[in-house]
Image 1 (cartoon, one colour):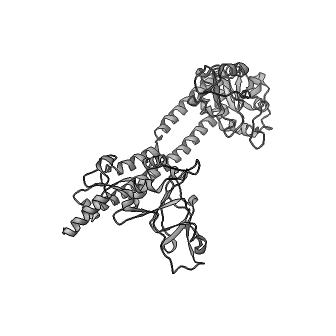
Image 2: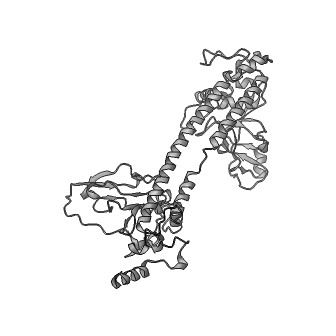
Image 3: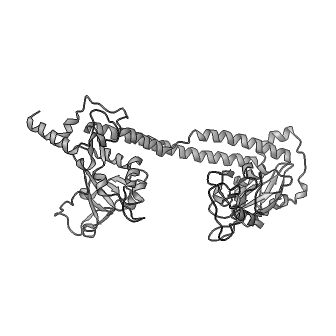
Length: 473
């Protein structure tokens, strides 16, 4: 190595290296910490395009074209050069586009510009354009910018008015960048890309599995209320009990199906009472701390039960005002308005005596029908079909209490109802256990891979092949 090159290395190292006390963590020995802006140009000057005519078409990338989930640019537009050459951000092939404004930045709108007409393009002024120098692999920089840790730190440095906050250019230029040799950067980018592709493939398989799970769940409930799951049970047990006092529905007029011997169609209002909840009195508010008076909102009613995580509470004086609108353990609930209209399930013991929102109703005082059986029926495909057909059409659909009472209900003996509940719960439990095997936190997994990449922990580092000084010269 010549003295001239030695001097160049010394000067470059002195300029770009991050002092040891400012380095966030330890990296492999053949890596260095540099200021981002010393190896990547942020918002480079526009290039001169004398050969391009005013009416010539060029690539244009609006913010909406960048997918926040995977960084893919979907649908590059073509606009006349004269319409975009002023007032828009210019970039060239392989430049990185980084959304600097909230919430696009936090959501991950970052992409590498590819397949640009004539090798250049224009886009939103809310993009930072990042152009990698010859010592940096642009995909290495791209994955850093898409990492959750980088975006979280960038968010903390945003400036401007609420709703119009932006990442300062100085933050990016001064960001400490862990920089391995160029060949290592490429190996890291290749491996991250490969691993993230495998994660995306796994996500697709999981989505398919979810669909299969929902299909199997629906099939189980469909069979349950046709009596198919208890065929053997009926062979071994006399039907027992009677349902003749419930005023059988005309199945032809209601498009209902034929039931097994010993079953009857009835109306929900003939075997239960239905009562709506109560809205908060004007001027009263819910509180987060436990006052002893929980208030069940429609958003708490999910998955056949009540989700306790977001439960809020009434002040004692508010509870006194609406104390007649409470639920008891084991009551069947059904949501009657909103996006999740028709959700049904059981009130758990821990919420015995809780107040109920006006956006739901309770079904109680059941006769010749057990609550678990009714809740399953309301969540079954045919039960949901009956509910949907009784929703009043409006800007926001509503299920009237009177229509809940008219809902059809296939009812066998109490003994068979219990058998159905046991069989269905056992089958759904098996399905849920299988499904939980696929409950993977994909964002956390992707984040972990990227974090390991920038710590040199992906097993790609080869200090014998690469010498960090080779690319610093």
